[in-house]
Length: 391
Image (tube, one colour):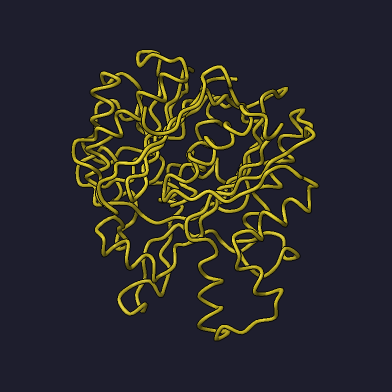
């Protein structure tokens, strides 16, 4: 069977959550923002043609621990991890002998690299240069918390965060770690990168997100870019976990560097396999937390998943109109929202603003329990699916 799957008996629990997002620093700040139904995006200067115009982007505001260093990226990684660990400890988690660290990224510390070349002309003190390397945030976390398990970066385009969670479960299943700290980070919403995302026909920067990014609704033009760093403490057992990860699957379309394969065969197969290894039937799924960037090809693919696999039964939602498309951290903030829904009894869905899919949730809605399927589709044909249930 193609792709990678997990054994359904090897459940993993989410014991702690930390979030830094366009709404600000902290899990509760993000949760309040989601429940508000208002986008985290703001008009920022320097993003238009020639970088002399304004654009709608959900940037993480300045903040975090200044002692970590000048890089907002590094501070966001550290803050999300610390909050997740503090949260897990408060819920009764105690680290096992071997704690692994996974960091999902796509482009890493983009602004730092830009400054390295354009402001510093490639010359820095060695300590400043080390902050550019993807291995450095992991090393800092391992040193701060005394974690000595396996550690690595995971990169699979916009599917990276889901893939990191699947990798964490593989580590737990095969005894490579007793617990895993998983951090998903992307602060790449720079003018240069936004320019190319708009040029590819994927991103929209000239309109407020709820007017332009309308997943599964008429008139959607694409996604609004966002930034996020999320932290998860993952373990086999915890006293008061948020949710369980029952299983997952991942694959690749093998079709195009940008476009989704039109038959959607690999996406459908990936969802089927994720359900199978999780021991879940399609009719048991209550919620579909979609990739939902608001692009036509992703709407078409996930609408077909809803119809062909789930018979249009689950409640459907996407939070990208609210937090933006956070690229390598997209699934991270979306899984965090789904996990918090299990504890808090509310699905923080985006409001409907145009004629929509009949199963699309309209804003914050009571969570009635049941299984959640989370898809994440990355450029280059990266497909991933995880299945969540109550703890």
